[in-house]
Length: 212
Image 1 (cartoon, rainbow, N blue to C red):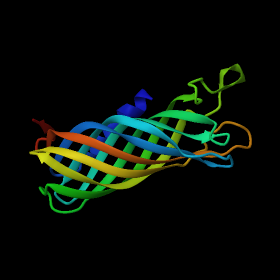
Image 2 (image 1 turned 30 degrees about the horizontal axis):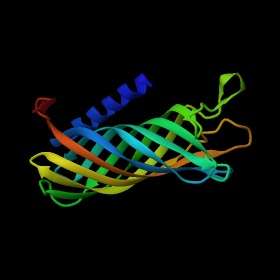
Image 3 (image 1 turned 90 degrees about the horizontal axis):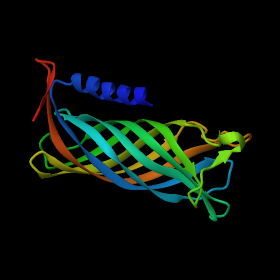
Image 4 (image 1 turned 180 degrees about the vertical axis):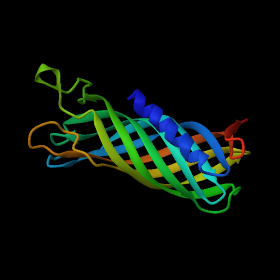
């Protein structure tokens, strides 16, 4: 997992370096997630929380990128909503973004899409008990790869301080269940708010990120 986080940081920096100059910002993000498990088991949607941090850049062309590190509660309600499967993940979405309007506008609508690397932290039932198979074998796979897409708005509250709002849909691509004859994939709708603060601009001539 440590290597994946290092890879995420390296990727965001390399993408930033490809642009002549961009606005670079960082900040916290929080929201609510409405999750379910899609497959051959009867399940229902359950709510959960999302908290984390993000790294943004936007160029004058309208294209941008966001690398995020999130703790997200996924899973589903099961057994006719009498119990829950709570799958808690560390997520690393890599979101390619297009901002509408002009660079410098106070309100910037946006669309985004990209892969998400998801690492299972814990699997618990409604009462908080760990869900495990005999001999401490996992019921659920530790890694999931997904696709995340959505839309949102960035609004400048004060010079270089932005309110970030988005609605996103996440679709898992891998079977998260390790049980025989069971195929379950993560699905979730997320509503998030973030606050970004200026970190600096990338200078192509010097090859450095000029921080404030």
